[in-house]
Image 1 (cartoon, rainbow, N blue to C red):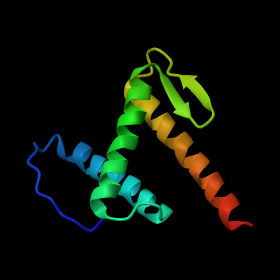
Image 2 (image 1 turned 135 degrees about the horizontal axis):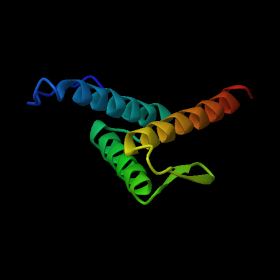
Image 3 (image 1 turned 90 degrees about the vertical axis):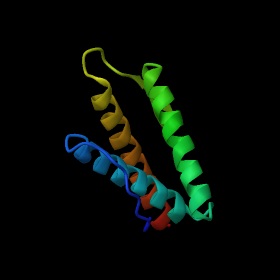
Length: 103
């Protein structure tokens, strides 16, 4: 959201860190664009709480996809489950966004 930070990491960690930065930046922008939370610190805290909640749900063996819970299949790996969750949430958010602006 327009701020820069210096973070030390290895060359191997850099792509993952950049992905994490982009992911967090999008989460924060989504919260900001929702208009209910004002202030970068509050937005960052809400993003952190949302991500922690998602992570804990994923670790518990199920992924919250709105009103249904989908177990992560054994052998698929946590990254795949998280990607599935993210894609499902993005789809749901897009549907809600379309409903909101199609009225």
